[in-house]
Length: 190
Image 1: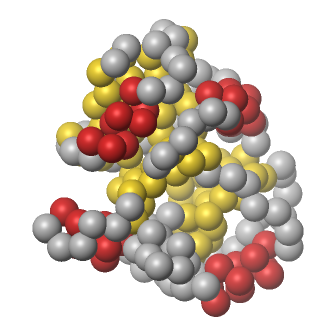
Image 2 (image 1 turned 60 degrees about the vertical axis):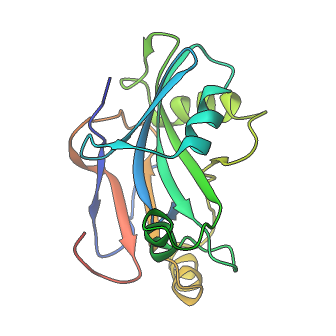
């Protein structure tokens, strides 16, 4: 069933303390994929059903009987950057750029609720699950280095920003938490 997603809190700068993991902030559709045997349902963050057959087929092929996966469906521009405009154009019958489902969290697997496990454990299980995945499924890898330099590079490349997550954080379904933060290059309301 649908699990309301955990949301990140916008902050002005990186935290000074703690064990943080960082990923790119994608510009696409936040998506919860629920797999039950061969059946897959895709939900938006507001519980609306999404229709992306190629994504659903790829999730159905994962070597797990049941799972709930959190990620972002994106369309990439010719330079490999997420493009929300191309994603929207695809839905209105315009261009058909390839879609990718960048997965960043595993909330349940084989009937086991994983939300109370630390992020680092959930992501390790997700990485193992995606080890042989192909096509549009991609693991949202961590990025490392000096955060100020990373943010500057993200800005130069025209990307949206960086998401920071505390390594020991549990998944707080339906909450905007300070355990997940967003550092945006362009400050705007979602």
